[in-house]
Length: 297
Ligand code: NAP
Image (cartoon, rainbow, N blue to C red; front, side, top):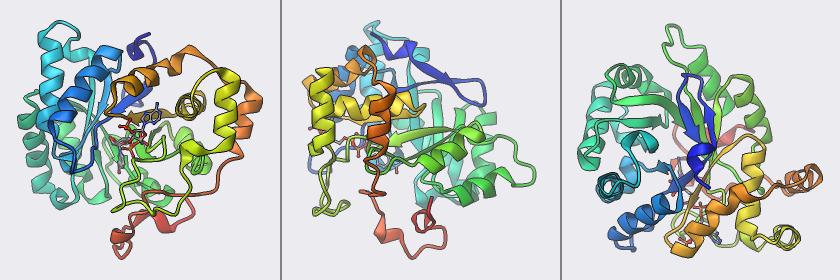
């Protein structure tokens, strides 16, 4: 089944596929892997690709997308491509140039969604949407207070369509999700499978999400895998979910998320796994005045 059929409408009228392919790969892995994995993902049915200036592989990801357009597998309009502005480009006059650099690397005319991490660059982001370089604009790693700050901004032209945040059964973001839903903002879950546990970013003493015994027993019950249970959980609660994999079998496996359904009781059990565990705690940024993870949500 194709993820193109499984889309939700954003508050600006565009549609986002509920399952996305994550392309952040560890620096020690060859960049060509991003091309290979993205091609496999498109062949497997992924239509939403999540990348960023910071991942330093937009050239490789763009190559995969264009090759799949050229061989007739997809059209440009079938693909929902997200890029993100990196923190060093927040000055309004730099925003458009960061997006233009991404587009040049991708060799695409527009991105479907452009995300920012901090409020300062909002006006310049709106201009990117007006210029047609980004179909939709959204935010990432915003807490409730920061979202409210944006929503209450005088003269706000476009409200963000989404907030992309870490979200999985150990950090289910229930309160933030309720708030986003109340404002018609889609919550996009990253690290939904518990991250790649890069030692530079993730405390190695934290429990491994996919080893969780409840996920394991549910996987057995539904004849699925713990990863699929974790992905399905998000889709059923109205969250758009990203899954990163460089492995062909696992990329294909993740598309199976549309082939089964969790019962309401099991959804509650999964809700009960929450322990507010943030794998990507971003402690290196913790001194910044806009550091988002000090608030409760
Ligand atoms: P993730 O999706 O949580 O995946 C974690 C690991 O799970 C992967 O390294 C993958 O390893 C493994 N995996 C994938 N499918 C599996 C399966 N079916 N069974 C078992 N293991 C499986 O990884 P993430 O990179 O932390 O997050 C996903 C994406 O979210 C990123 O690539 C990026 O696009 C985005 N992101 C955004 C932000 C932000 O600040 N906005 C932050 C982090 C991530 P293999 O490759 O070996 O399969």
